[in-house]
Length: 311
Image (cartoon, rainbow, N blue to C red; front, side, top):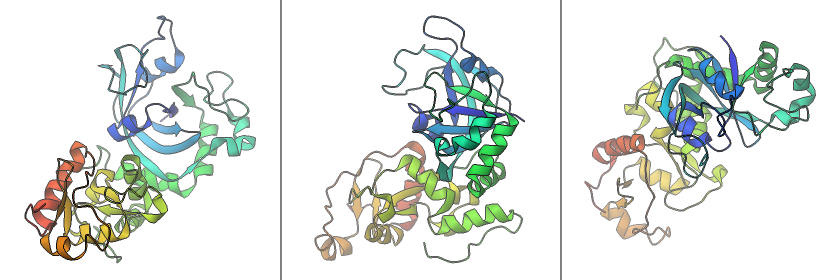
C-alpha cells in the first residue's frame, strides 16, 4: 500500500462527490509531468489525502487503476486542460475535523520528500502539484496529526469498499457485526453528526428553505429516514440535507417535502397554520438536487410526506 496527496483546489467538489481523480496526461505544451504520471502508479487499496483550500478535508481509498477518460465537466476549472486524461476511481470520506498542514509544518518539514514534494518547506501548497506520493514517514505524521477522524473515515471506507449505496436521538439499531469505530459513526450519523454531517457539507451549503448558510445553526437531516435506511445509506451524504431546526422538524415529520423540479411541497395543515407565522414562502425555489438526492427524495415523497403531492 502507498500513500498519495492530491491537490483539488479547483476540482474538490466534483472529484470527491464523484469519487474519482482526473488529470491530463501531459502539460499543455505536451511535456511530461511527474504529478500526472503518478496517476498510473496508484493501485487499489492505496490511501489518498485530499487537499483543498489549505486543508486536508477528506481521505480516500483507491478502488481501481488509471484508465483513459474524457475530461469531466469541471465548469470554469481547467479550461486549458486537454480533453483526454487519466481517470482513477477513489472512494472518499470527508474528515470530521480537517487539518491545515501549514499549522504543523514544524513537524512535517522533516518528512517532506526531496523531489516532487506536495508542500513547500514553508508549509504552503504547490500549485503545480496534482498527485504526489507521500513517503511512509510523512503519511504516519499526517495520520498522527489528523488523529481519530482519520480512523473514523477509514472505518467507513473499508466497511463498504465498493462505495455507499445510493431523527430522534437514541441508540441505533445497527448490525452486531460492525466494528466499534464504524458503529460509533452510525451513532453520530443518527444525530446528524460525524462523517455523515461532513459528507452532507460537501454537497449542501445552506438550508434549502430559509437560506441560512451558517452551518452551526443547521441540522444534517436524513432524507430517507434512519429507520428505513441501510447502514450505507445512513452514512451517505447524498441522503442528507442541511436544514434550519424548524424546517428539519417539518421535513422529518412529513409535513413538507421537495420535488425534483425545485418546488417546496407542503401539506394543507401546515400551509394554513404555520407558513406565515414561521415566515416560510411556499413558492420558494429550493434549488436543484443531484441524481442520488433525487432518488432519496422519491422515497421521502412516497413514504414520509403526508401531502400526497400537495404543493
